[in-house]
Image (cartoon, rainbow, N blue to C red; front, side, top):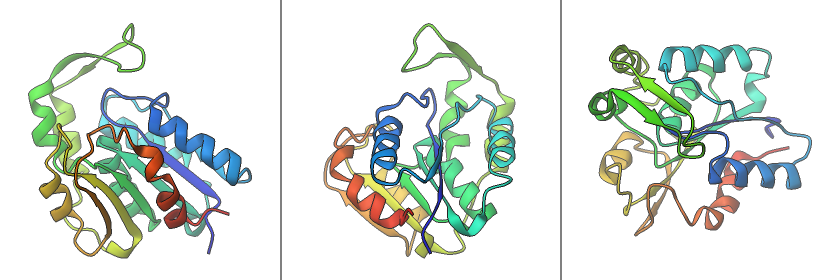
Length: 194
């Protein structure tokens, strides 16, 4: 069955203006113009972010939707996929953001709009812990692009989190997946968009 709805979730300090989000949106618009695309600007509170997402997709047909996410968005995409049963594409997904982001309590500037700042509050760490998926139920529904050269996250942890999933393990690369264009065809193939 082809998918008619695609949700994209950006990472920490990122936004719908990220290169990956804009590239994927443009590809979907050009090749699959009938597909509903949604890349919301996520609030810093993980609980509020997932409440917003679940409200936003409440009317979407579960069997015709898919999700993609990068970094923290990959962590969120895993949670959404487990809640909805939809396939998920994960781009250097965060595995334990409660642990990693506990060191980043405080004010942060957005990557794509440095004039905009937000506060990452201590309670957000517990909210992340509450969203942790310890084991995916259907690994065949997941496709992860993981760069060994990721300077932010450990590729071995990412690989270990998704046993049985389709994995594209890059020998180099970086956290941003600067060579994202090289992987877009495989991502679109996996998503089976209408």
